[in-house]
Image 1: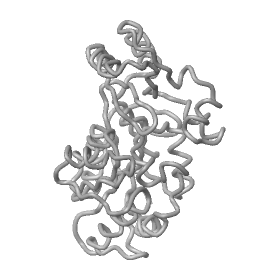
Image 2 (image 1 turned 30 degrees about the horizontal axis):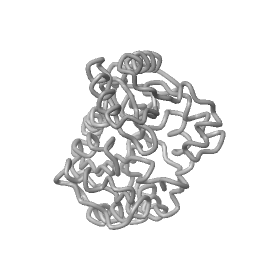
Image 3 (image 1 turned 135 degrees about the vertical axis):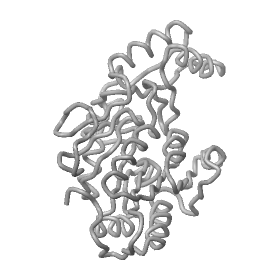
Length: 288
């Protein structure tokens, strides 16, 4: 790889690196191999839980920091950076930078607020593993991992009243909760977002390398803060129809031609070409 800024890639998962229905990354395998071979930092930023993201990292064979539950926390492997990290907490073998509220607080405020404005909802905390598996197209193991939430609550509004969504959104805002629209479920969380976590990790990478170029990939409204926080934002085509709305909110972003992992691969390969990255590029990640 040529001299210059180190690329650091921040990416959403479902509908971006992973197919939104099968959760396969097969169509992105070639670009993933280039990223791995060059040891470019690949930071997964998802609404998924810590346990779910760890499982994805194992599948794609990477070990880098990651961001869970829509930006609620950044998890940094031990010894990854060569300097003392900002104040945080130790959890699950990681140094954790927390931005969101604890899960039980989010669930309590969400339920109380929904009851106050008379908007019936159903959330992961009330659903069985089997119900989560059926609703999300997950295996029983993955559904169990999806329920191991630490910060945010996925939920659905079950009211037929078309004004219910706006009414609940306004009430959650007054209660101090953030309302995030996801692919299958809405999410309630403390006032954290993917962008805050991306900025915190970006600053650590800058301290490590001196000069970095941040690349961000996402496909939905909950990725807008991530895309706004990076140098090179890329909107992965979403056949469900969110693409134009996301692109309008991030006017500097380029939209991929392909959807899902195929679009992810297209975008990442073009970025790596621009950085002169070959399939066997030089190491550029810390802690190796």
